[in-house]
Amino acid sequence: MTEPAASRSLVIEREMPHPPEKIWRALTQGALIEEWLMKNDFEPVVGHQFSFRSTPVQGWDGVINSEVLVIEPNVCLSYSWGTMGTMSVVTWTLTPTTLGTHLRMEQTGFRSEKDAAYKGATYGWTKFIGNMERVVGGRD
Amino acid sequence: MVMIPAMQVQVATDQVFAALADPTRRAIFEHLARDGEQNVRSLTARAGVSQPAVSKHLGILKHARLVRDRRTGRETHYSAQPQALKPMLDWMGMYTAFWHDRFERLESLLKRMDQ
Image 1 (cartoon, rainbow over the protein chains, first blue to last red):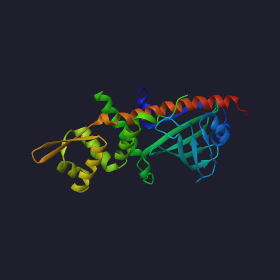
Image 2 (image 1 turned 60 degrees about the vertical axis):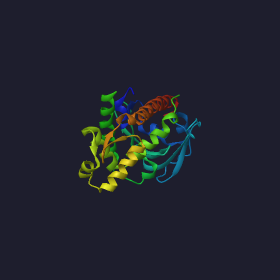
Image 3 (image 1 turned 180 degrees about the vertical axis):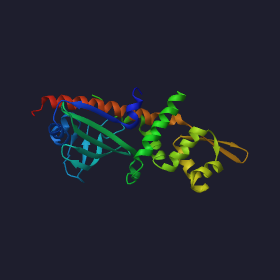
């Protein structure tokens, strides 16, 4: 692994020279989402269940099962991300800047799909991954 | 194009995720990884659950190969096998690569889009 710091919490942030309204469209319009992420039947409605689909490969059907969790136009978008027996949450946060928009993606709370109803473990899990990367890294 | 890492690590990763989804098991595992080999009694003293519960958790951790046991006489000693986490950590690293790739594609789309 080349980027342990990033993988620990899976946060990716970038400043983009575009207004939040434009980035929001790319994040929430199905046809646009398909252009950069995956085929989908996303609707910007909280509670909407949808899937992302990519080409199946051996060992994976290419499907990600999702549900819209947060829609705050031009500010915050969050959906669950269930695949291969694990469930996580992907959250996009848009903050206007002088140059355009600071875009932040965070994927949190990796856990077994069976335990998807269990809330509140995100912090403990992220901390655990951090600790374990040190342990594993130290023994390699 | 970077794909989502399904594939070879799936089975190992599923078991590891499932085993570590439970906070009590995570605590037991972390305790073993940090403090070294222990028996059920000393693990129970720290875990805040009954000894049968600890034994059950250890069975699940053992099945995921996160924990190994060693018998001496009537006593069983448990130790952590942190290298079993590697597929999961690799998997998370591959996810990082996946999102970096998608950020590139998003930026390229934004350049093509009208205001």
